Length: 289
Image 1: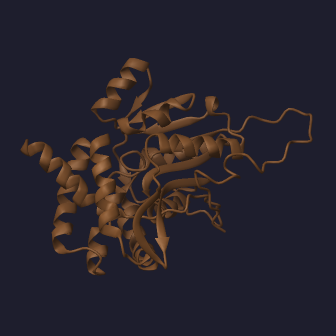
Image 2: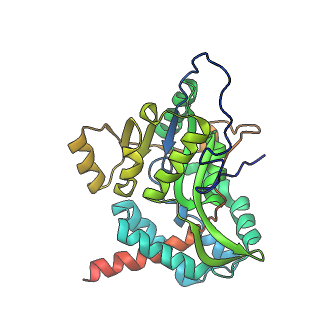
Image 3: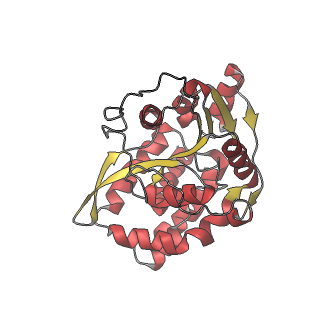
């Protein structure tokens, strides 16, 4: 059964956690927090579904072409805070009126064909190592739940957190209820840590983007993966380890899908292909100036 955790749930904030009656010391619980795109996945998960969305009439041919170019730009340079803000605005405008169940169905039918070959072998091995050490695996992404949760489950993750959109009458309103990004990620991580009893000073975090600097600062063992220029500079200044993941392989060849794995997620919306146009516009504008 899929658990649901949001950044504002009382349970997540620790309000309903009963005090321990045992006086014996409890073992320290820890977790490894993973960003998704370019950290676990070789490409942007948010740009991967433009073709199936086009096939089902959610986006037009122009948006498909934009997503192809945006994927290239994303791989070359990533996205900074301003570009991410423009992406969010673009997404909220385009998705308004979309049927939630249709989006879920499209993603469910095409997820493995699109995403499975993109998982870094090094990331899969690292996740397996953390699990062997008894740590929970948490995928934390600005992408939506329809993308993040299935990938997290396939990876054997314990929890996943993602962006949540407002839904009324089964359709997206175009408003963002919770944006799992920047400080929003840290808020969700800290609330989950209270709920699960994680000692963050003993936890691990992995990301490629300077926008995840707050997440990396929140744990005792940060590592940067395939970092962008800004994050690489921070890693050097802070003495953080830097690793390179470069071997994407089919996920099913690396980690067997868990049976009945509990993936606790924020109630969120996977708006994958929509980032395409926003990133393209922001990058083209920057190059045109």
